[in-house]
Image (cartoon, rainbow, N blue to C red; front, top):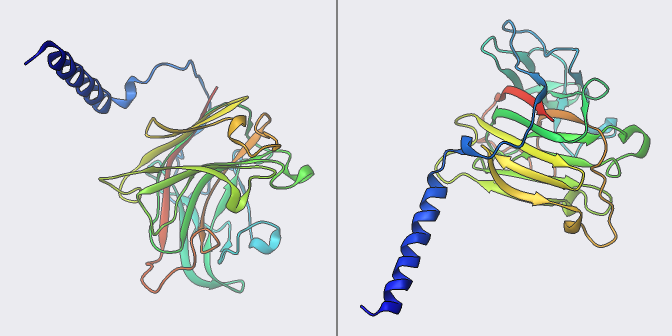
Length: 275
């Protein structure tokens, strides 16, 4: 073996070893970013309790209220659709039932006017529902939405997925000139599991000029003002509030099929904000 071939072989071996080390690295070994917990909801409580009213509001009704994406559910504040399970989880349940002129019910809650944040790490540990036509989401909207409307207020989707694709989580931003079908997105794929079979941690780390998207502390996308369409405005430098919901049907996922099983639940172990 000549010396050039030996050197090349050693480089390949060292490169493979380095990649293997990265692949096997415990995700808890990520460098300390200096964050401190500033707020959380651990969803501790008695079975059947509603979510803490000091933290969460309900959006009630349908897209006819001025929001929605041709979804099929009626959002309620009933404990049938949303409650604490007594095991440290919040349950959001989508039910196939006639209600107020719709065939499905579910729940959507927000921290609007109660807990609003500007920058930091925002995360939730969630087990999602599954099935054609299910649309779970953990996301944020600009706190000035009543004044400027959507998409000018901005939207950050920390986690949304199509129930018919239970191994793929999507993170997106929406703003003026890049909203709805033109949102700027990235996705994270599980190759040996599904998001409906166990809990996973979905997070963003957010600063004045960047938004990093994580699943289980694995960074899979970074968005900055340079990623926007030419002439578009970066609207992510102000306060935002949190939302959790499970939609049924809509532009993003299509309608449920006869094979979609109900009820379907999203379990949220906690929501935490670090700054």
